Picture 1 (cartoon, chains in turn orange, green, cyan, purple):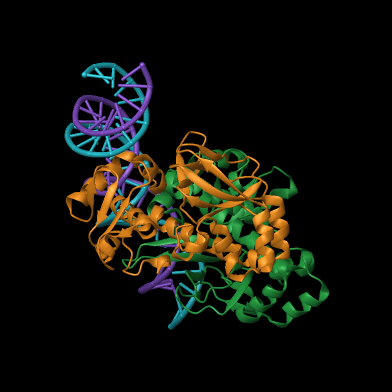
Picture 2: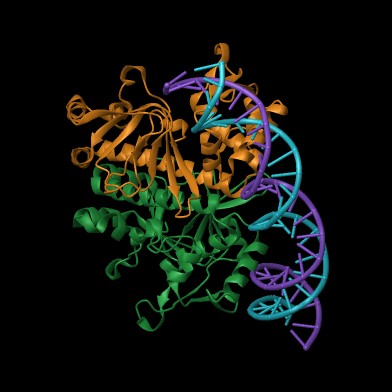
Length: 248
Length: 248
DNA sequence: GTCCCGTGTTGATCTGGGTCAAGGTCGCGC
DNA sequence: GCGCGACCTTGACCCAGATCAACACGGGAC
C-alpha cells in the first residue's frame, strides 16, 4: 500500500485491479481465464468490518473502490493503524490461515476477491503471480518501514504533513490539469483515524491541521476538503527531502 | 526478521542459512548445486557499514553470525532503526536495484551472499524460492507492523520491555536447560542503538532499564548481560498478552 | 421545526520523556 | 602506570503533546 509502484490501475481492467496488477502484464489468456473463474466481488458499507484479526481468512483480493484501514489494538484499547488500503491495494496473506489485523471499511468499499485455496494452487503453478506478490509485499514493507520513521522520530506537525502528503499523492486530482499546480482532495479519514495512524490524539491532529491552515500550507473547505497550493512546501513540512523517500 | 518462523537454522546447513531457509526443504539436488555455485561469504567488523541506503545492491543473502541493523536517517540527523538482522535473517530486495536503508554491522558479522542477477534467474526458474521469499517478506511485514504499534502507542517502559522480549526470544539460552526457567543473554546493542530502534533518547533507555532492574523484572551483570527471571512478567510489562502477538 | 449524536475545534492544565549537564566505569594505546 | 575516548548513569529542568473539559457544527430521524 501507499506506494507509487502499486498506483496504476489501467483503464482496460479498472474493474479488477488484481488482474492487472498481479497478472495481466505477464499472464497469457489461459491463466487469466483461470483467475477469472475464481474471482468474485464483495461490497461493504462505511464502518463495516471486513475481517477481524485472528479470524480465518479464506480469500485474498484487492480494493476496487473505497478505503479500508488495517489496525491493531492492545487489550487496554490503545489502537494503532498499520496500513491504509486505497484502490488497487492488495489484501491477503498467501500461505497464512488467518488475518493478523482488523480490516475496516472507512468508506463504502468494493473489493475484488479470489478464494484463497484455488488462488494458491494457481500461484504455485504460475511463477509470475508469486513474483508479482513478492514485489507488492516488498513495496508494503518499504512503506511500513518508512512509517516507522514517521512514528518514531517525527513531530506532530511533521506527522500530519507526512500523512497529507501520502494521501495527496494517491488521491489528488490536479487542479485544472496544470502539472505542478495545486492538489485537491477529500480526507478519507476522521481526525480520530488520522490520530490512530500517526500515534497521536485526535485533539493534537485537530490542532496541527488548524496550524497548517493558519500558516497557509493547506486550505480547508469544510472539515475534509483539502487544497495543497504548494506540494514542495508540504513535503518540506513533512521533513522529507523534495523527492520523498520511498515514493521517489 | 524477528520472527519465530525465520528462526531455525538446521544443524546440517548451519554454514549457509539461505540454503536451508529459502530452498533446502523443497529443492532437489540439482537446484541446490546451482545455488552453491553462486554462493560466497562476506565478513564485516563491528561498526562497519555493509551498504549505504541508495547504493547499488548487487547481492542478496542472509546473516550467518553476528548482528546488523537497518536504519533510516533524516537530513537533520534523526535516525530510526527499521530492522534488526539476527542470524538466519535475510537481506535483499529481489527485483530492486539499490538498498533502501543503511545496513550496519553492530558486532562482527558473517553473511552468506548470492550474486543478485544469477540468484534472480534461478528464482524465476524455481517457484519454491520465490514462494519462500514471499513467506519471509510477509514475516518481516508482520514484524514491521507489530513494531509500528510499539512506536506509536507504547510508553518508554513498555518499549524497552518489548525490545528485551524480542531479543530474548531470538537470542536467549535457557538457564540450566530448564524449560520455563530464567532466560540469559547479552544485549547486542548500545543504549543509543536501542533508543534508535524505540524512538527514544539514550538517556530514557538508560533510565527505564535501571527502573526495570530496580523493580526486579530483569537482572543486569555489567551493562550488557541480562537475566530474565520471569518471561511472562516481562511480556506483561511489554503490554503484550501472554502469547506475544505475531510471535505466538 | 428540534433533538440527537457523531464529528471537530479550542482552551486550560498536566506529565512523560526530551534536553542539558555532570560524573562514573571500563578497556585500550602508549 | 596514565590518559583518553566510548559507553553508560543520574540529576535538574523544560516543553510537546496528552488529558480533561466545554462548546460548535451539521445532518438525519421524527
